[in-house]
Length: 358
Image (cartoon, rainbow, N blue to C red; front, top):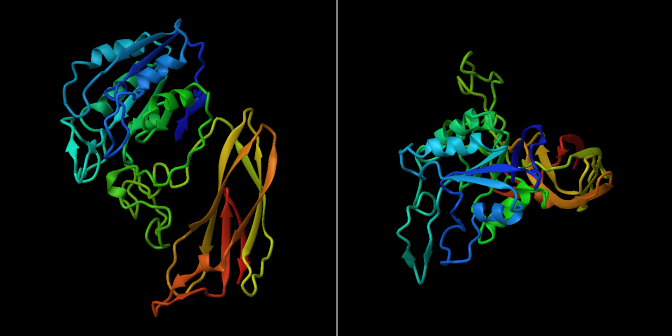
């Protein structure tokens, strides 16, 4: 999932003359919890080597360990970045690898994420954060690839890196998939299924919160000026549920509820137009959210009720139709019964809004 793409640095050209590949996870293959041993994993470094021509100089440096505090490898990594046109830094966590019956056999590898491996904070383990910050200081445009099993708080990395890609645990061909996105063979289209907090203190952070649960006072704080809700921070996540960038752009228009007064057992029918306004073909996940404006019990500010993934060529426009069953609008009332209350609802798609009544 592409989270940041400053100045459209991505996708990278395969004609690049030199590139730095840095980080403690660049030569590792992470395929997730309880996975079978596999000798055919494509690591991120190998994936990049496979996709680039031989004339491109790849400067690799591990930089640091996954969790150790040793910074002795920083100099080699800084030199690699300084001698390259672009630096790609792979950081994150390792997952548990077990196989066999029951709990099976675990490897002797250090495990940082997985069942029973909880964290008291969400920062990058060890000195990985400092490594990325030092690479950024070289002035070489830096792209950060996060290989993790959970959201990570990345602090100044988000402000200063040119690109950020969330790869999760990408699987056996993960290195190939990452390289194909970095160098434009594949246009990213993934959307986050979980919100990324700016700070661990924001947890729990989720999109479908109750109206009074987050940002109620509308006085966000900053380090320079205290506010309310969070005294020194706003309530917005770093990256919210449903977020994800593409190498092209999409424009939404003409959101309509085709039956503004929903009667009987009929579905809510919604249409919206989506156009690819960029220069390359791409996929977009069209997401439809509903807000129950007034209800007898408190309901979330919005809830995802439908989505469709479409593929559009440059300049192409399509009209998308959603049909939402009334049962999807039900609530649990004060008597603990599931009901659909009459009233006004709001539809939200691509930043556009419309209303209907039941």
